[in-house]
Length: 239
Image (cartoon, rainbow, N blue to C red):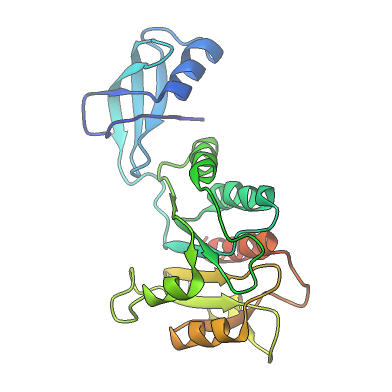
């Protein structure tokens, strides 16, 4: 496990966040001169040496920088409807970050049972999962927004790194799978709907916005399971 610093990784010294400072001093019982790994979540992992073991603001000296640490071969953005049980969405965020995701956007849909969401805890869970899984890039957790508003923000001509776009839903005609349509090494944006699935107008709007309709198989999956399944498939195809 590595620890999180509040300032950038280019300075000769850095300060751990309060929670990590307490963990470093009171749990790990580290002292001056002990070495540890730190990151600010910018993709750089640093070998550091403890300079001031203060339980609220540990100061460390940066000894070595590993830039672009364990780079991912593609950018993965999951837009998912918040679950009725918030703990299920929290579980998805934690596991998706461990497996590999760059951005998560909660989207409020026509059939959503949860229409409000506080993202502070999701952001903390993402940070903790990033550290626990020894990653150095902090995922973005967006504020929730209505799905149709989210689709309007996507410019087909200038979208981020021109990702392949997929919308996963249960109803309707036969569709291809992610494995059949996704090109490894290509950035991806995946839409996952609520427990009641996307409405017909949402599916039509997504397709008009450049999303390819896909199926995740014959089983009817919970929202968080579908989102994690898509995350796993796309990461596996990029190994």
